[in-house]
Image 1 (cartoon, rainbow, N blue to C red):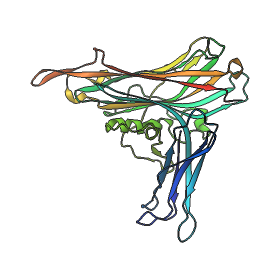
Image 2: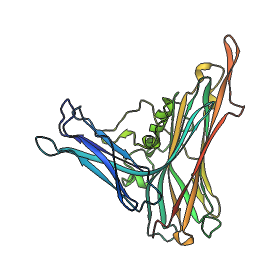
Image 3: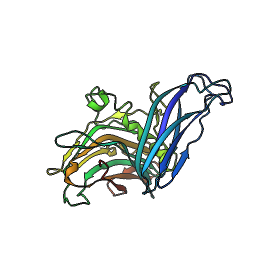
Image 4: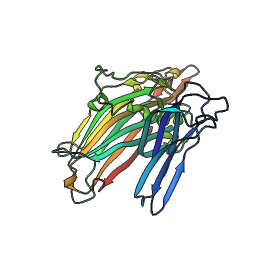
Amino acid sequence: MCFSFWYRPDSVISSGEKNKAYAQIQYYDGSWHTETGDTVKPTEDGKWCMAQVHASLPTTTAQAKVRITGIKNTDGGFQARIDLASLSVYYYAMNVGAYGNASLITNIYYSNAIPHPEWDGFVSLGFGIAAKAKTGYSVAKLKDLKVELLPNNGSATTQAGRLMILYFSQTNAKNHIIDPQTQQDLINSAAATGQLVLDIGSIIFDAAISVATMELYPAWKVATLAILVSSGETWLSRQINRETMHNPLAEGGTSYKVWETLDYSGHLGMNINDRISDASAQYYFDWRFRTTTDDVFAIRVSATVQWAKWIQMGPEEGYWDYTTVYESKLSFVVSLANYWQ
């Protein structure tokens, strides 16, 4: 579990000892435990700050709650504006191989039973894949970025559910645009009503950066929000490219998976400088199911990174080989049981 919030102090001092703040997660598994994040010490006037904390919850956890704490100043109370607070449960996998590093993450932002005649179980999630090539290799494809409805672990053999991708974007070291989305102003109803305060894809860019710097950060850092929402600024210099969705809908009974593929191989030719050192992709999707059909529901999240290898043919000649299979595969299962009861 990862909890974060943004705040802008009304005033600061150079030592950072004024309007300090931290985030906490408390959970109960027979007794109460508290995880406290690092104390944020603001030193720049007018700048938004983010406090964060993570906790690995045991399977016996019965309750969890979060807390925003502003530390009282010597000359008065904590004074700041609090903005976006985000709590997410995440699943994470990483592949460190001979060709490069790859990380896959899914965050659960919302889960509930809702009044609906068909799909009353509703889960809101984000999907992200990030890849960083090692020396002599390039990212060629981020392929089969897939979510599948799995047969239930309970009595049902197939899942009466639906998956829908609502927003898809990518970024890469060369800023290649694969298949740009033409309707830039239409995202989805959730965003229009304020449920998506920010580009949900930005949640995975922390993963992209961690892989790009070859640092294997803990999963909680990968799950951290990486965008400064209120001011519209990001700490990324890379352009985010929204992409067209090709396989965005799956309904149990007719189809059971949604997936997308980003093919960069057409940009890899006979120049070593064509190398795409890193790339990441992300989409926001919802998962709905009929709670009366069973008591356990699951999806499989998976992705494959296909790499290209530089083949040196002479002192000044060579090419990028992306026909030979150099792949890194990642996957995990997300399951929900009895959460609506």
